[in-house]
Length: 237
Image 1 (cartoon, rainbow, N blue to C red):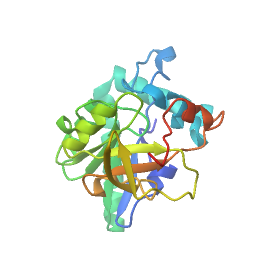
Image 2: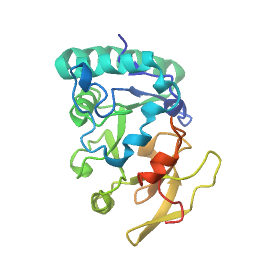
Image 3: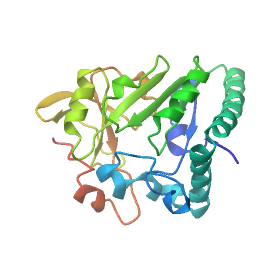
Image 4: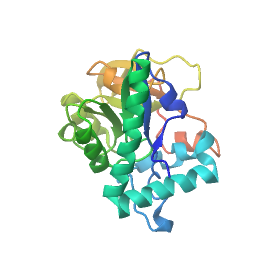
């Protein structure tokens, strides 16, 4: 069983100078019926718009692989980390041959800081990064582990607190592919520059003190459910 995902649209969007990879566990409660646990304690309104409903993630084979990884992480964390590490070692050799750096996202669909910390501490020279909805993200960053806070319905104050502590905030907007990204965006009266987070996935290269704009993805059942839930926000806010 492979732990690491390389060939995924988001990971493929790496800037020149990086090879990008990560780990795709089951999001939220997907693994619960198989004996797992909730992997996204603060999933909130993003549920209907979860990327497990988009693209290849919808395939039953992809779901089965996510569940297997998730059960391994919860039931045998040491074995999980050792397997992941063997694949990170291979990625480091690949990066060295190409004369580029490795950027690694431990939580592609989940929010498991303990797992991310174990890997980041094992590889202090590798740049790790994640999105998170867990409050006080600045308390969980490491010299080589960067976090971007994800805005959801009801966590606006947590987002403002993150900005106050130098953690950028990602916002999913009701924009289609190719629509222009706003230059600025406003949350509860605070207006900041907005960067286009769809250009690549390397959030640790973003300037500090910005909103990261993400275009709402096409999901099974249509994007309207994400708009109705309040997760896809207006670009004119």
